[in-house]
Length: 273
Image 1 (cartoon, rainbow, N blue to C red):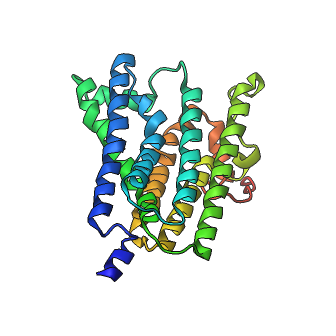
Image 2 (spheres, rainbow, N blue to C red; image 1 turned 45 degrees about the horizontal axis):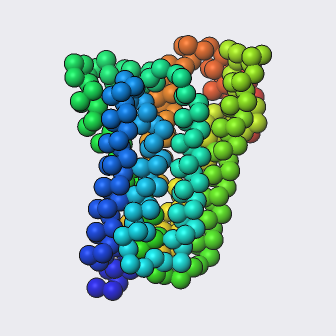
Image 3 (tube, rainbow, N blue to C red; image 1 turned 135 degrees about the vertical axis):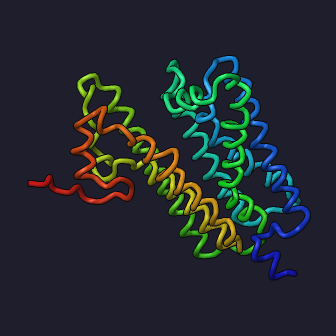
């Protein structure tokens, strides 16, 4: 039994499962409150502003529910908290005063009538569950008493690097968009010279780093979190969706695609002759 508990990263107890359910409840409450706000503003894209808070809210619930936390709990929650707060504030600032995101407008159009009610399940409940799954390394790391190791240090450094990398990419893009002289041009400077989506790369680094810390705690099972985050960013709501028709809307972007890696940073390629 002790080996099984260790393999689950400390959650193979009634207290661990209770903490997991409280984490899901915390994520659901944040999503539900945002749904009410979306009804008032007729804007379900508000969910993007709170999704990261759903994740760290689950993590805080884990720490509050468990009678004792492990040696990596504070570090993991601090990194996740900084990541969540920065991302939430940035998306809120970026979208302030803007209409509902066109991705959600398309979802709304496909699901009328009564989309306001349907969105509770299609958007907010789904996002709450996804956030809960992504928070898995926080549960594994917070719950496990395993001693700090070199793998923890490596994970913490990778997560910190990802947080700085992502924040730098967003800052560079914000400055670019704020410059009237750059209107209509493609951002291919700074970190964006080496990756078309350096912010997404940084975000993945954050969650793979936190997973390494969970792995050090015995929570190998929580690999579902960085795998899910990577799939979402690469194939679902990230790169694939954003670049679906951008080449048609902005022909210059096709040249950018031809010379720049989509995700992992690398040296720009030479234009084909």
